[in-house]
Image (cartoon, rainbow, N blue to C red; front, side, top):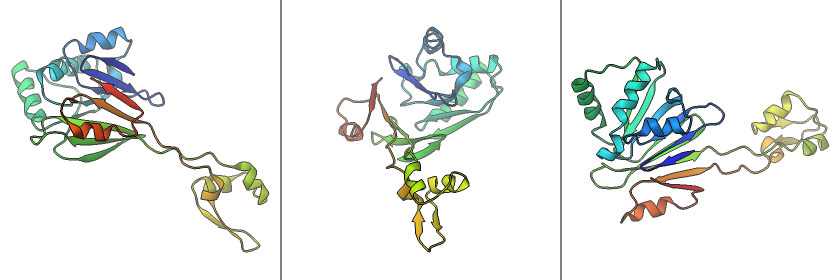
Amino acid sequence: MLNSPLSFLIRCSQTGKVWLFNCPDGCQQILDEHHIKINQINYIILTSLKTQVISGLMGLLSSLSLNGHIHDIHLYGPPGVTAYLNLARKYSQTTFRYRIQIHISQQTHIYKCNQFYIYTYPINKWGTCIAYVFLEQEKKGRFQETKAKTYKLMPGPIYGNLKLHKKYILPDGTIISGKHFTYTYSQGIKIFPLAEYYGYRFNYELIDNTRYIIAI
């Protein structure tokens, strides 16, 4: 996880994909200093359209195009981000070699993205400032192999189905459910980038049960 003024990123250790929050001026230099390749960026999330938040956006998108980036870029932001991007492309005469999928956050919404859920919350009545909560999916509890063996269940496909909480009827008529053979689910990590935190009570309510709070 990289954290710098107004911006930070999350990199998934399993897939290598990067979620970049905000793109201020000098963002590419900061990424380079931390040995983050911009081609790993697949998601850009903007908390507002303030100049200090988006001043490096067009430069980053242009660099991705020059570097031969071919994967879609998912851009999340408040209303107005589409108009800003279109005008910036028009006056800079810039074209991209990849597709940009824009997600406008006008109201509370949930996006499912790989192993994460992204919750969006407008925190003012105009919807120009957005709070985002990163919530990892619940993790399944570890399978209790010892307990399964007490029921004379041998390792194999049946173990896999029990892990999925499917039910079985044993030869003696006993019904067993997979949920009794796994430990309790563990709660996923909750990350809250705190971008607009002065005077907003709503933000403090979102902080509840948050493991990582990033002030940006």
